[in-house]
Image (cartoon, rainbow, N blue to C red; front, side, top):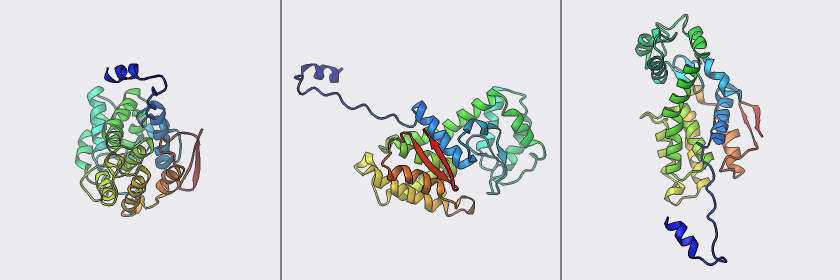
Length: 257
């Protein structure tokens, strides 16, 4: 109310409207862009909704990787997803694997999952209840925390996306390559905008720290999702992640108009 009242007593010559804040990554259109960007890196496709059924062991020591965000049988997030799905729809085709998923958590083992788990995952992916469970777990574990921290640090949509992509790949555990550790590494040398720092300078430092983390693990050592995607937008000054967007991942070109 105070702002409205004050605007009323300014002379017409002095009254100016405050610029509208650019939408964050949680804006529906921006979120759709974020999903496509991650899918280009994770699945070599912009069709992220086609990835509900995706499942394979990519040999990174995390067991099966599956779904729209790469839920892993070895890192607990796949277990949480299947538990949520089962809470919502008891007796679903994946419910019988819950004991095995608990046993293999923290390992790359397929014990109790093979040979039928991948086929049953693809069958479950046809169920809109499972698709919604994937969406909800993606948001709870990865998207919402990344956007929340990005906004706290004063970052616009590109920075929020850089956080999201990092937490998708590295998780947010206590190890040296987790999202929080990457962020702390950047904060050693620069301040984020919320602390008076320059946004571009900070994001360059964050991406430097991200590249370092990626290179610690052979399975993630190709840093093109940073070098020829996020860095491209940053060099262009596209901090609001506005289309058109052109980028490359693993040498493949992508476009969002």
